[in-house]
Image 1 (tube, one colour):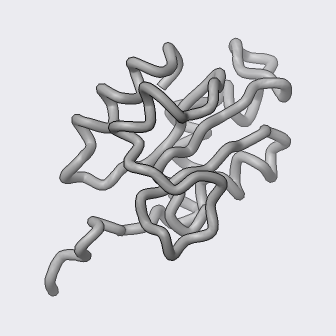
Image 2 (cartoon, helix red, strand yellow; image 1 turned 90 degrees about the vertical axis):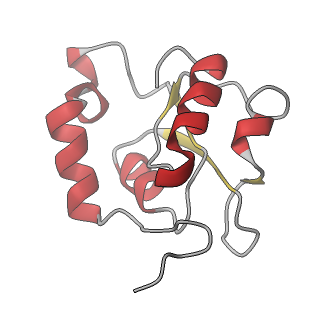
Image 3 (spheres, helix red, strand yellow; image 1 turned 30 degrees about the vertical axis):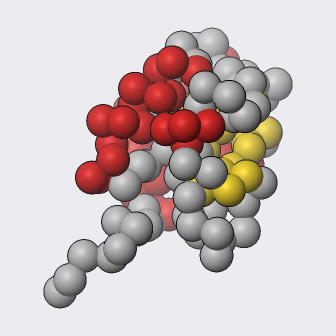
Length: 116
């Protein structure tokens, strides 16, 4: 199997919920930590929107972005560049970035938001 040109390997819904409950219970149980239903979340590598839909289903305001112009998101960008200029201000950044760009994505996200 050849690699996808944009390194797109989408996270299954069950995987998202398990990950959120296990590693970030404050997202689905906001009374346990700082994230509450008034927090805004940025999903800069939204792809098909699975993570964003899961977060929205739990009442969070999510802004989406992606490099792929073919997907339906709020912003089309290279987040590693947009993080410093056009990315909207948010309380959290939650994403599953393309593996080959993960380091650059984390650096850009940390420059933009303290909660990544």
